[in-house]
Image (tube, rainbow, N blue to C red; front, top):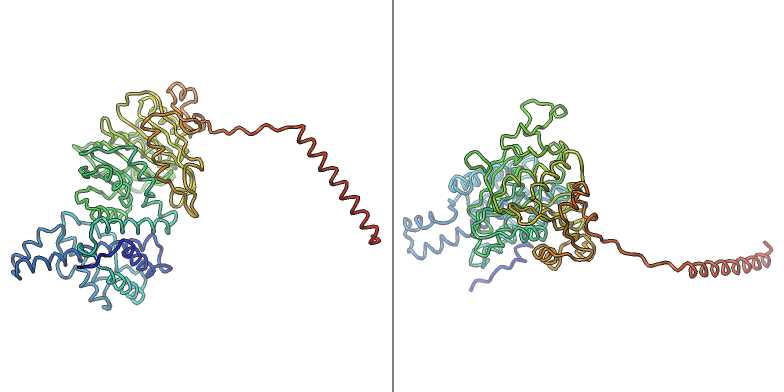
Length: 509
């Protein structure tokens, strides 16, 4: 019987492979090479095992074997397999050989893999260095991956590969610091959003800033049979590629992940209008500067360009245009315009969106008056890669049957686990937030239901401490007792000074 390879063994080899690059190039860059190689290795090993099965089943009948292989999820020819690349590991053109293998893989699987590898160049001198050191790195990478066996019969479950991919993405995000936050939302924060939007079977699920796709996968996993339609868009080309590979490794073959700037060029359209989704989740880049430059004409000077609502053909910014230096409400408005009737939406944002004035205040007022905001949830600081600032989750709903807003302050120390580099939401913390939200419950020093009138009285300011009183009363001070303690301290000082004077006289000083 074939011995199974464990999740831990796979993770260990993968992290060892990362040592090939560590210290030579930035981890936010080398993750693309490691994760692409993992994808190739898995496809190759699965293909190789199926080839062996069909060869045995059809007694070497080449025509029947090839017909069976052509019906597989992915089709590979000999020169796009990992084994072929490994055999060429000492070739001086190994970078170009890998690139050509990826190109062949795309061409053989255009329906699924078209453009997936276009942003990943294994022969890049600017990233991987000159030929000698580049070839040495790629040789080491292939040798590390050769230690892994990822055949389905050995791995046991496809989830193991998907989980290994997820593990690596999370480790890279942690390593990459600020850049890590651009492509990965920590798993428990993703879990919170997924449970808040409660996706249903046949829902369209959308993330307009999907990064490596981990948040979308979390939401899809809330539906037991995963019978949902997944949509996402990502501006960074290499991260878009990771998202597609991530989907395939989690058994999601029909996700529609587009590459481009969601605000200036939204790519999920129907009949020329924004597509509508039943569940939307997002962790957009916090307070994105120059978010509107994609609307500027050719050669427009950054400092002279002024974004106006009329420049957007989809009319998303009619409630107000977000400040040039802070794109938070631009993303919120895009998502609200993309929300289907009875749709649910949860997004992570910096606290500033709750109280900043000017155009943001105007947009916030409009959202409240249209009765779209359902809940404001304060979450702990230090949860996200690359930023220590506290954040909040805003939950929105179309066609709400109530007019008030639930405020939850889950940022207190008892509501998370402190970590060395990063704080963590635990299962109990998520359950408490979700239960409070679902029961619409008022809990002292934790949650409060505010009427629209109360919010209006606060000039549409949503700052959580205005609604959830977490103030701890200090014990009353007994002034008589304090007076007595001061008197005792004075007496003790007097006695010490008398003793010191005596000792100094004895010493003749």
